[in-house]
View 1 (cartoon, rainbow, N blue to C red):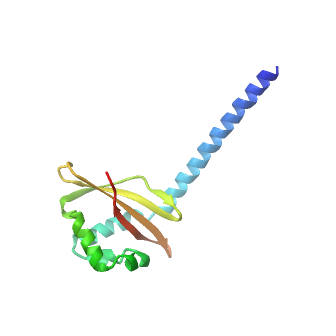
View 2: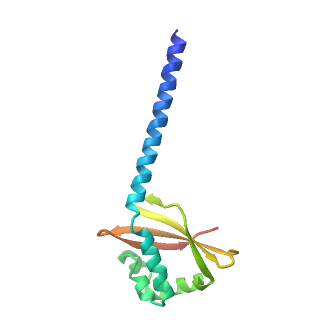
View 3: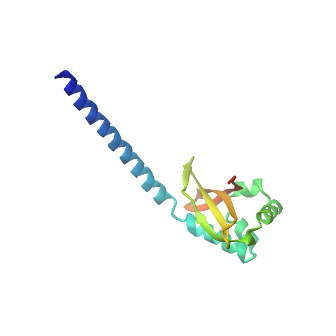
Length: 140
């Protein structure tokens, strides 16, 4: 009888643990979706500014800390090194939260879909508006 009781308690504990884990995951997923509102329009605005030749407008979408670390000339060099005119399609990855920042991997794909450029964008919320805090090329 003791073994049956231990088995029943173990099963209930395992189910309770799985339920708690599912609840925790669901809450964090909802939190991520709600907190990430506004990032997609920012990404679209960033690439539209670049496509229209308004590099200063794209540069102003970054945080003050980014602009202190990366001056305008370095920003221009970085954008030039990416050769963005080769890419037409944008695919967004799954966002990750780290220290009140959201990191999102964006994959730019060529029109023929043979080449891909993955970029990690780090976003920081400043006064209810998202800003780009870091942009870096990621390894494939």
